[in-house]
Amino acid sequence: MKMPDLPLTLYVDHACPLCAREILWLRRHADPARLVLVDISAEDFDARPLGRSLEQLQQCLHARSASGEWLTGIDATLWSWRAAGVGRWVAPLGWRSLRPLFLLTYKLFTLARPHLGWLPHPDGSRRCKDVCPSDERGKR
Image 1 (cartoon, rainbow, N blue to C red):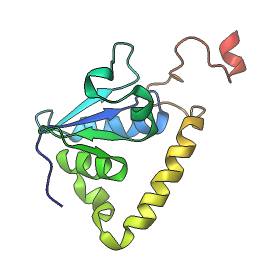
Image 2 (spheres, helix red, strand yellow; image 1 turned 120 degrees about the horizontal axis):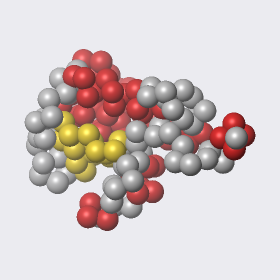
Image 3 (cartoon, rainbow, N blue to C red; image 1 turned 45 degrees about the horizontal axis):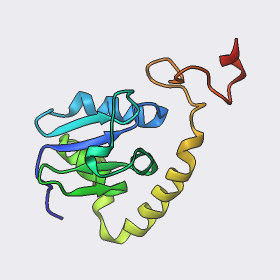
Image 4 (cartoon, rainbow, N blue to C red; image 1 turned 45 degrees about the vertical axis):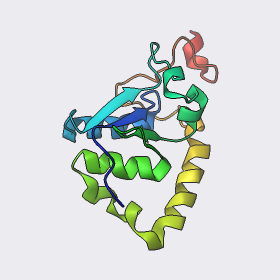
């Protein structure tokens, strides 16, 4: 697999507790000239210029190369970690023999991810905009 043109722009959901942990780790290691992180949960984020909907970006991880090539799912993960210089941690994602297993695992993760808001968020909040509909504590 050929490295996508850099910088690679990774569209991340900082509101997701698990995603936020990965984002913090990548931000500590990545050179912004190689990996740009864009928070799709930010109030001022607009997906329309990308030709994708916010819903599409929320369904699975998306990355876009400097030449405009889109990478999704485990490919977005693999190449963003490689762009950050920490690709050894995700090297198995590039192994052809294990790819079907990783694709299935990632699909299961995308189904579970919307239900993980109860996990602690690394910034200490639950990232609710106003009141979490499923959180009775948020109604105080």
